[in-house]
View 1 (spheres, rainbow, N blue to C red):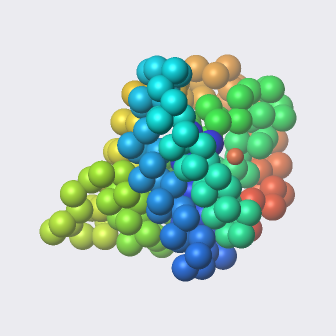
View 2: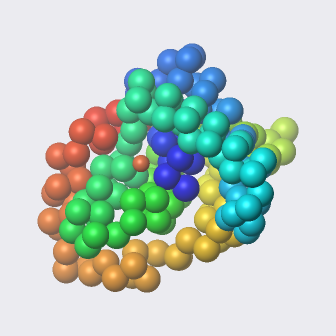
Length: 176
Ligand SMILES: [Fe+2]
């Protein structure tokens, strides 16, 4: 889910290029296709190999296009509560992308298509909303918790977490 977040944040980043777009979309396609299989059966070498390619391409995408508010916020949760990075990203990913729909609907519709959604006939906004659904479904399928409360995150810490998240360099390339 960290790799998926790298790919999606790079794809909607203000620093995205045709090169990062290509590797981000391919990474998303492979993750959609192979992550469930790899999680269900860790001995499935084909699924793990394809996930290795996916995470590498997602890495190429974000090392050039940087990231966004998912990572800016997840870094605070990791540092503050010692929570696992990928799980924090997975929980935050659909919420941040919902925030991004208003400025990057077509980009998120592309994400939906890469995640196997038939977006033919849908508006960009409808396609973007379908991407949010596909992200939530994939998270569910691989056992990601529903929200921050399940991870022990406390509401009284929100202001310090938010203040620090806004100082995180990853936020600078979020589309809003
Ligand atoms: Fe990450």
